[in-house]
Every structure is written in C-alpha cells, then in structure tokens.
Image 1 (cartoon, rainbow, N blue to C red):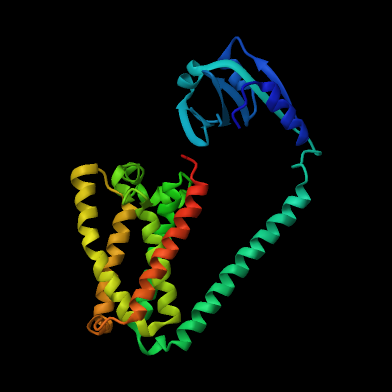
Image 2 (cartoon, helix red, strand yellow):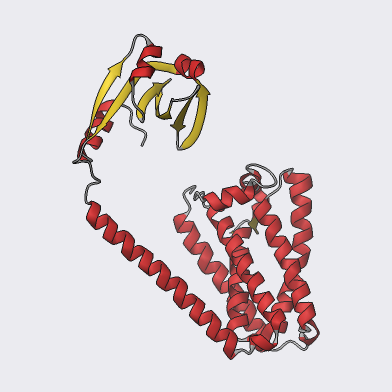
Length: 303
C-alpha cells in the first residue's frame, strides 16, 4: 500500500499483532548488516521491501515487482531510514477465521461452477451425438479456446491485471497487446472493442453448437464472414500500429482453424439456402455484444 509515512504503516501492522520500529542509520553499510529481513527501506521518495541480503546482492520488492541490486548500488540509493518488523506469537490477520471460511466458500462456488459447466457440456455433446462427428468436438474446443483468449483481451481492454494475459502478450513483444488495444482501430465502429466482438462471437458459437448442432452450417457462414478481418488485423498490427498483439494473433489463428474444421466436417456446403434460423443467430450475436458492451462500460476504469 502506498503509505506516505511510516506511522500509517505502523498502525496497520499493530492490527496484525506485528510490532515495528523506525530506525535511521548514519553508517548505512553497518545498518544493512544489523537489520533482519524482511524490512522496509526508504529509497528516494518511497519505501521498498527488502527480502534478502545474504549474498552480494540485495533483493527487494518495489511496486509489487521483484528487483535486485548489488550491495553498493542499494546502499547508494538507500537513505538510511528503515522500518524493522518484530513478529510475535500473537501476530495474525484480523478476522482470519472468517476470511478462511469465506475463501473455502469461494473455492466451493468455483468448483461447483466448473463441475456443473462440464456436466452440461458433456450432456449436450452426448445429446447432440458429437462422438460420431469428431470434427464438431474439435470445433467446440476451438470455440472455447477463442472464448478464453477473448476473455483475456476484454480484461486487457478494461485495464484489469491478469498475469496469464501479460505472459502470453509478452511472448512476441512486451506490451504489444497494450499498444494495439490503445489504438483507435481497437474499436468496431468506435463503439465496441474487438475483444467484445470476439467474446460475443465465440460464446454464441459455442452455445449454439452445443444446443443446436444442426445449425453448424450457419456458424460456418458467420465464420467465413469473419475471415477477411484476420488479414486486416495482421496488416494493421504490422504497418500501422507497428506492434504485435499475441492474443489478437491467437484469435485470428483460431478463426482459420475453425474454418478448416467446418470445412472438414462438410457443413460449409449446407449454408444455402439461408433460413430464418440464420438471422436469429445473427440477432443472438448482436444481443450478446450489446449486453457485454453495456456491462463493460460500467466497469471500465478509464472512463
């Protein structure tokens, strides 16, 4: 927490049963030897958490980022001010038992959600006779991959930190996803982010395939309409944004894999003639997109 004084942190630590003592060392080298880790040290205008000083380097946490400096470099940056911590047998998180119970319940809800989700998916696959059409299973799996990647992109566009998204985005270019998502072209008609479009597309496609597998040909038709976007996306990232969004490239790859999956399943040839169900499916895409956009606007931290 960004405390501007040691007094505020000292009062918080007391609530956890941890005593602390503010110290100032004129001889910083000796002071560093005397202190036991972890302790807080003032570096410039802020405090860092020193976690280890046993070797030739000093390891510390700065704004939730693990960093390391040589002993001499750290001493040069350190003002000599420190907050030493003394843990006692009474040290405990306030309301610890209630927090543990809450966590158990949260985990229970998560496992129940996953369990019921898998049950419904398996039931729908058996009811739709997916086992005799293995390429539809591949198609469904690709839809879920696209849905998950789109979910990560939605979080990125909302500035919600996700370590998994950051790791994937850094595979090709560090902060490439952030740069591309901050461009004006990241919104469809300036209203909907492409991440929202992707989430709506993959979620509706997956549900339709599970509930109404007989309309796979119409899903293939929508997929074919989306393919030109993949060329534009790659062109834009290379020549206009001059940055690569790994998550975006994964989405484009999934779109093409879906096309080949539909092609292999033989449903592309069943697209015409179009019936009313095709237009109902289009309405479902738009409805989910509008609903998601409304929800995201209420959660968007940048607005």
